[in-house]
Image 1 (tube, rainbow, N blue to C red):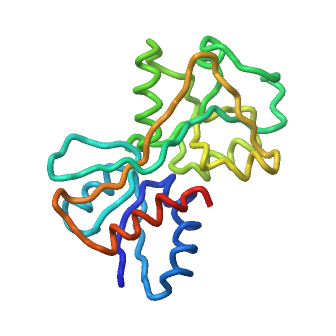
Image 2: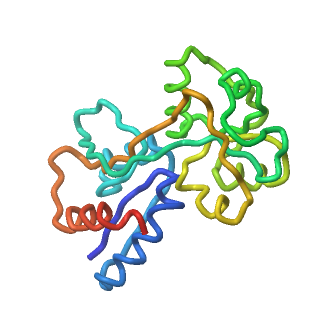
Length: 205
């Protein structure tokens, strides 16, 4: 069996590999081709039938696509573990908007969720000092500076464990989002259904 799917960057880097390894043990004859990109790119490839399905971080209103909740994620404010600019405990929104922030590029699903949430709180811009095109690049930058970034909790599990980064709670501000399974409306595949079920049961690996 060949599974051809796409995943938005956070999912492709931090969630999918562990689950695929477990799936391969159970179904050794499955061959995976995984394309990663931002949510918009993945949806486009599904519409053009270049991918069977995908996992993205947001859903659009295109009727040709069907979305199903996969897992919930939280985007958290992080900085290097040794940053003394922040003490223990939560910071206020006022403090937060003055912090130097490193941000992802334009089409990033993570970035869209962040600004949607901020807008509800009447915040229209952050003190962005740099744009980098991947979460890994942002993390590698953060290790050596006192800057901050808003990153998926899934992307920083090991960094927290090994005291490379720490999270900084913001009073009365939470960034939550769903990751969705997405496919063309009406598209059916037993393998895809089996894979989705497996994913849902094993994403906490």
